[in-house]
Amino acid sequence: MSDPLPRQPLRSAPPSPPASPSWLWATLLALCLGFIISQAFRTVAAMMAVPLQQSLGLSASQLGLFAGTFHLAFGALQIFMGVGIDLYGIRRTLLCAWPLTLAGALISALAPGYGWLLLGQALVGAGCAPAFLVCTVFIARQFPAARFASLSGLVMGLGGMGLLLTGSPLAWLIEQSSWRVGFGVLGAGSALAYLAVWIWVREPLENAPRSGNSVLQALRGVGQLLRLPHTAGILALASVNYAAFITMRGLWLGPMLMDRHGYSLVQSGHVALAVSVVGLFGPPLFGRLPVQGAPRRRWIVAFTWALATLFGLCAWSPWAGLTVVTSLLIGFGCGFIVLQYADVRAAYAPEHTGRAMALYTMAMFLGIALMQWVTGWSATWAQAHGWEVYQAVNLTVLLMLLVGALLFRVLPAPALR
Image: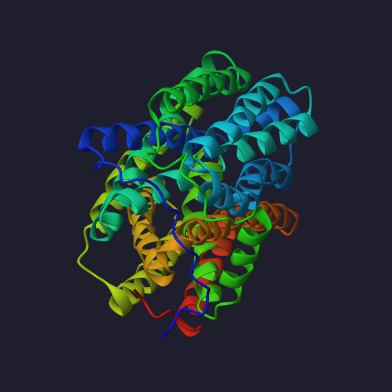
């Protein structure tokens, strides 16, 4: 099948020597540091939820909006970040966006009220918007296609170190000081990540002549991607699978353990840390599965159904041990989403990699914002109608996963490359 998108001429540049392995890995690790910090910011709500409710008097729905604001800003800017990467390069795009993270962390740490807290979260989300995208585009451009899934899984595993920071360490820090200090420490980490990118990240062709595309033309190319029939199914599943994990780990895990099972904040932090640790191993292992093409898509659907089943168990779990084990399985099992990254890479032409990855990542993080807001609303509804709050939350996640998997299965599939 011919590609309905017009192929754009590749940038011309003087021949350059092959990149050395040491340069490739140093650059990838510097980019990963920003991704680690963004992972920490996206999951702070799990440990800050109860302190924020006590400090600012937040309701469950306000807490869901607080957690979702980061992801709303993060997801809404993915297209612009993808266009920026395609036109101006990874380094320039990241260095222009990241200062917003520093500003947002400072505003969040000093926020006198809920509105300022939301503003800080929005700025942090905007600044972190290119953090994972630059990693995947760098891998797609600098490494062989056969290594894309395994290396993307490795990056996602390394990014899980950010989740480790928002487990026991953040819980202990908040207990010893306050949630404001937590934001301050993450802001300091953001400054170090910016410095690492400034020093180490270089692109061999960054200063080469462009293909002549304008920003408007690049955005028009995104619209063409959206009109492809197979894009709808890809985005439907993208909006729920990672959202399920982040909604559990990044928002409801701490409150559920404390309210349902009587855990302390630090005990909840230990569980969150354990979930994060097992989550480090999922993406690298799933990335090594020898599946391609249509079989890979069938595996993606099957893993999504299994994930939904785990949330069903969590919804009706009467025992703390079962809740903890189920949470650990969710943390590990969500690593399968690395397979969908490989599916997206195979579904679009190489010259559209930046925008295709941006579109997929946008759906992922707008989906997180939506799921966290919807689960916050369902928790408030459950309280008003005498339901167990976390049963309603987990069943909402289960339903959204099933709908996403169904749409991915029945909507048109791409002619994979």
